[in-house]
Length: 236
Image (cartoon, rainbow, N blue to C red; front, side, top):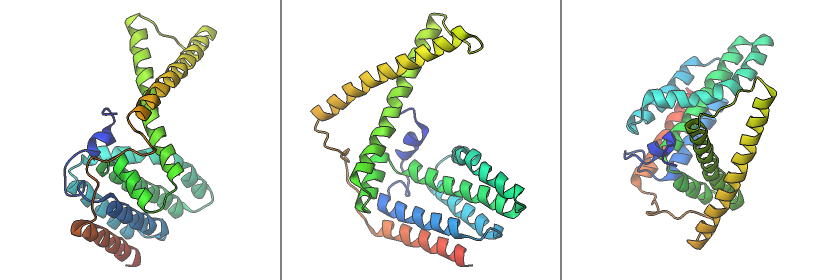
């Protein structure tokens, strides 16, 4: 898992990283609500949200360009609704959909980049999120890396043997289908082995934290300051 950029970022040390995940969740929810309910024709508000998020990135000592690029993952999906609004004769709403979607994605990237997944799930559990949903999230998050690791090994093995295939012919499609089937078979076997190892080490549905966070004065200040700033921008 260490090759994931967000996972590396979440293990850094900064004032924002040290805050309780519950405080960061409250701040993120307040900002998302403010962004989502802002009128379409309010560029000054949206610029204020962007400055607030930029301040968070700087405080967390994260690469600004890297955060911006990872927030762009939502733009292809938001672009569909933006195009529909544009065709309906509402260019202002189309632009607002793209900008608000990007700012919302930026908020979530900042939250994930400053909070390790076990701590984030622990914070969600404290707010009453169903335990079954949290188990699905954490196992899906981890087993995706099992598939990625197996695909990486298969690609290296094929490259070392001079192998490869192209999808321009029927043989290429057959080779690709066989590779996908082998990938999932190996990933399933590896996942079962990992699950047995987890059970042998006392896994009971959640990943324990080495140092459980405590809600302190700095956490209260973060949640109050971020919520007040988001509310002020929304009501300005």
